[in-house]
Image (tube, rainbow, N blue to C red; front, top):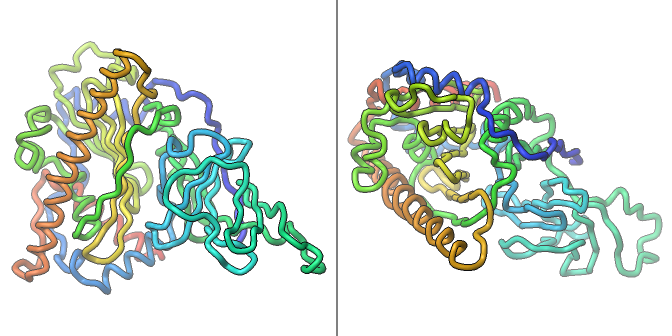
Length: 393
């Protein structure tokens, strides 16, 4: 399967909110507490049935465009990183022209894994460890030992297998199948451009193993009912008495929460001012969560392994690398505290742990369905979007 990669312009992003972001902020300012969906129920089997999980995986994660990594993981030309956690041997590269690609990490000679390890590598070319077939970061076969022993071989016909991909809004998306429609990814990418994500620096990266269904993790970011309770000792106090509004960008969900009384007289199109007053969150189908804080962004990519096991790779993106000297050290300590608060505290110890406890309870068979209140309408809406995607597969 050969596919060309679509590359969007990576010019510096304007720091003006998009019309959709402004519209949500206006709802918050006006005190319009509008949440996605309505109260309802979700069958417990959607989280516990292995057969249901396999249908979801086939319809969503084996078919749809999905976020793989942030652009900040490969900030410069001449970089590559192996990626195995989607269940496929992938290789993400940025070629010498700065274009991002997603390949199968497989040599076209004898099928050997081309690049080993899990860390980002800087190189002008990739050499197979078995027979030293050599590829450029654009996937083209450059050279092979003893070429006379392969009479008639055309190097142009032995490029790496490239999967469809798109770089937009500081995220690298890929699709497992040809013919994928990246239009909705590009549309939501405009919001991330407005947040300055294409120009951010990767400060920390960590993969969590969560013993819970992937949707239980998504659920934590689809409702505000738990925030002042589960997060009482961490971020809960910052969200008291907030107004929440939500909408959709194609199949992707977007929400905003803030305090209306603090927003009077503020230019809501000024992203820097807006981020101090409103917390946005994005739940991208099938399984990515974006949480912009006032001065950094967390990108969490969910990669389901089984109905009760999910890998979550968390990336913390900051405006720029900490400088050297005392000022840089103060900045570094600030980012370390933020990373410890969210990745190690709020996410790992609270949200992910709650997903594991939810899985344990649902597996007992004590309840047949989850009961959702009006503060949890986002969960019902997301489940409906998942169902729609399954029906159209």
